[in-house]
Length: 171
Image (cartoon, rainbow, N blue to C red; front, side):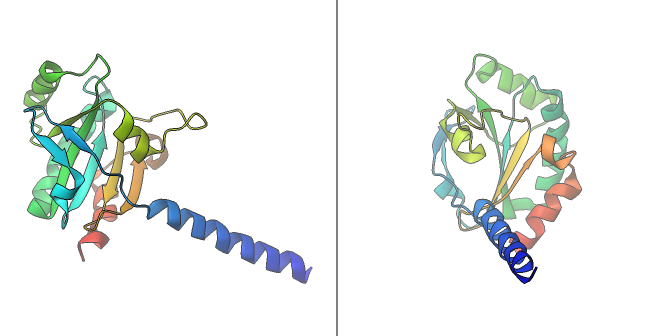
């Protein structure tokens, strides 16, 4: 019985350590163009909390998240940077993004990704091939991923959910 209790305690410590390692991994580097063909690199935002919004312009849940991200920017100002990442998949292009930005009053850059950045941030693999949109990844001031939140796992990407993830990183 003592061994079973000790094993369970050790297993739960190992499991929580594995979770914290996953949540605290270094954010992969990238260089992607935005809708104005300006290149963006994670190093450009060192010293700020960066909020990545992985989305598509034809996704209703992504459309609902855009105003929340604008509220987030209004709340934190230049302490954070919001970057929306759209796949270069034939659906989104310069025209669809321009219409989307106008319609939803989005002021953040939209980065065009061929898939590598999205796969590395969301850990897409043959064993984990599904992308849930929208997905938000929060990177701290020194370039470590601190939160990975998808619509599927969070029950909704709300202003409260996002501020709860960001507030501790700004202290």
